[in-house]
Image (tube, rainbow, N blue to C red; front, side):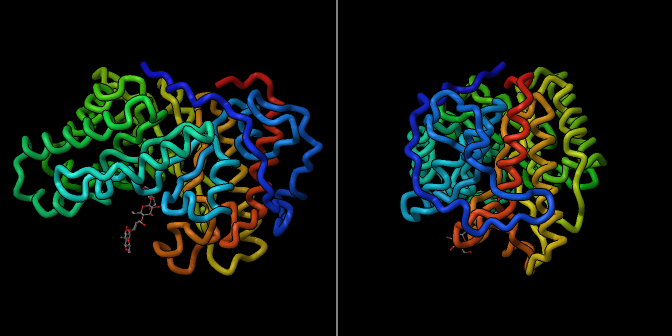
Length: 377
Ligand code: G3I
């Protein structure tokens, strides 16, 4: 149904000086940062010098690896910008494609921050995951203020206009769209938000149809958290997706956010993703991070390493898993500490942009996977 837009011609990326060796303390799973000399492969379009960036290593397995980007830091924070450009082959807007940013006042659009990200991606040979069109959160205040007084037809018309305007604006520039985000509760019941209250569950099919009309080539995803685990929520999303398929709704994939916490253990992500892939869908890890309580103990660090490795391996083992996106770059700008006080250390770089053991874990996992020549994506 869909195909990826052609990425910008792979450019020969300038290698910038980043002290990747510094600060890497290997605990548990990983012995040491990858030696550059370990790489006998060079993906097309990459420099002939040794390239142990995540994007280069992932390319060897046909996988896109991405990060959620804070566009305020692009071009203003050199270390952040360098990592974003060099390490990743897809980018996701952490916030700037959400409705409250895109249409802060009804009928007045603010595409500039997201356009900046799309331009950055094109300059760096990266694809873009659009995030997100329909969600209960980060809605503009004009909408939440008037929602209760709107009829179902009025709300449906507003949602249709939003989707068609935003998707049309970025037509041809978005690889995957998170069309609907987090529509279920953990017990598998529909989330009680303005969409389900006023429109019933039909808004989900409508959203996919409208997005497809506006950009027929974009891959359209349903995206959620905690569906990495088998259970009521994953079952509910599975049933919904099967129903959408039976109705001929243009859904291409399911995104597994993969926000993990060492205290809850490792999900059976591979098994769950494979179940969705067996429906003929693409899958993606869309928002990976692994938080823990602070300060991080050696045991927690070991658990984090293991959970990162298992998440990435799960994606590598499911052929229809087409991208692995990390929800941020550095611990200093992660969403975790403000949402879970006392927790953090969820990302691959620390707040000084020093790569952590988790970074080496992902390098090593990708390096091992590159020895599996049967993989094609
Ligand atoms: O933009 C305002 C700024 O004007 C204001 O001064 C400041 C004061 O707090 O707030 C700013 O907005 C914040 C926004 O991020 C942009 O920085 C919001 O308060 C804050 O709540 C918002 O958090 C985002 C969160 O979604 C909202 O739910 C996080 O950055 C973002 O990482 C997070 O991402 C979500 C995914 O979209 C969906 N899945 C879960 C994931 C984590 O919650």
